[in-house]
Amino acid sequence: MPEGSGGAPGVTMGGVEWFTADGYWCSRLVFQRGLAALYLVAFLGAALQFRPLIGERGMLPVPRYVARVPFRAAPSLFHWRYSDRLFAGCAWAGCAVSAALLAGVDGWLPLGAAMALWLVPWLLYQSVVNVGQTWYSFGWESLLLEVGFLAVFLAGDDVAPPVLVLFLLRWVLFRVEFGAGLIKMRGDACWRSLTCLYYHHETQPMPGPLSWYFHRLPRPLHRVETAANHVTQLAVPFLLFTPQPVATGAACLMAVTQLWLVLSGNFAWLNWLTILLALSAVDFRLLLGDAADPPSPLAAPPVWYEVLVVAVTVLVLALSYRPVRNMLSRRQVMNTSFDALHLVNTYGAFGSVSRVRQEVVIEGTADPVPRQDSVWREYGFKGKPGDPRRRPRQYAPYHLRLDWLMWFAGLSPAYARAWFGPLVERLLEGDRDTLRLLRHCPFPDEPPAYVRARLYRYRFTTWRERRETGAYWERTYVREFLPPTRLDTAGRRGS
Image 1 (cartoon, rainbow, N blue to C red):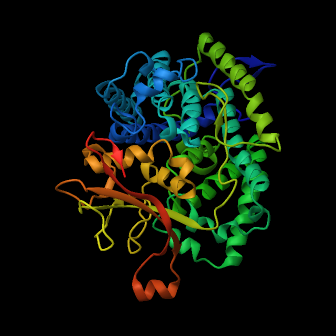
Image 2: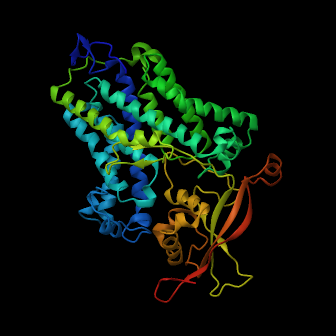
Image 3: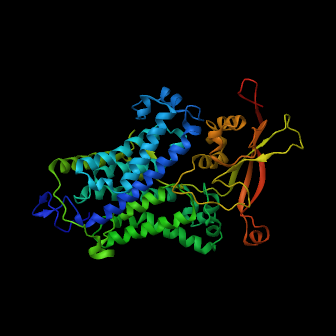
């Protein structure tokens, strides 16, 4: 556990101050500002994407969901009332509060008020995630909520960060990394043979602008990358709980590994939030010297605050039982919440790696009756592969939820059963909110008469193919995913 450097009175045990760690004042500052930035990104994505996804006329409407799922199973203020206007208000309010926290407004407030301000985005995002259904079912949502809850108890700028909360942040980081390492070793033989990176950069959900180059690295280097990943996830996390400077070295190594993942793909804010967790374990005095010290003497923490932090620590440790049992189980599952508030969760990534990339390509035609010679025009997505000549884009930490789910649809139609039909229906209607999720609509004036979907195999081009064609992808038709489909006279889908 981190130790305070003196100067911040707190609870003493045997004459040694242990409750606060004023030496981590800079670590807390970096962590809080980074977390506020990620909150801002998350709320911005919710505000801009919710209408076609979970709005009143969305593919998976919130009103329909809350009508069948009780409040205790998915606590959310939208159980009380839902409207698109209310959801938009909550999302933009979350943006405003996050921006205020990013600007450091909490540092101007008394301790209790600062904690209340940090509680607001956590409550608002909790309400969003718990009605977000498939669109919000990923590990980084639970991770943001778990970390956001702990951030409430990190105090304001005038009180040193509590040792127990810093320990709990390391405990989250340990479970994120160690859980991911275990699921890899148990889940897919290619991780054990060090060959998964032969495929990963090409088949990951949403490649980034450098993914083509990562994929084309020499295979021996891919094996070194995989082995280094195992060390970072299975051995290094234990060093987080050792004295400084070892813990700082371990945290920095984790941060560098996560930056490598940032460069090689688009994983929303998962990597950035993991980096922030690592930075919370860094003793910046080792790196910056006196510049990492607080600008003014820190106040003594009030008793009520100490009691509250101890109670939260006991709660988190008690709730950790099921995630730890899962992590150690041979039937380990990843990215699962064991309580409705996402207070303590289990994590993991890429327990299995696809060897082949399959993409669903959606097309439309204006012909009133599809013929063999009909012209089918392709819809373009912002992040997922489509046009083989288009270079993959960088979007993370912003999350393109529809693009991400389209990758799952390519794996199996079962992943898209609930929402793909409604998506096609809205394309046939020319729904403006849905079209805003796309990069390109080939029918700008009026919607198509028919829409179809086809499955293609995508692979990264070779160096030679890239020089000759300028294309990043080569694609081959596999089969029909959805036959030509139209709206019937009642406004419903037909074929």
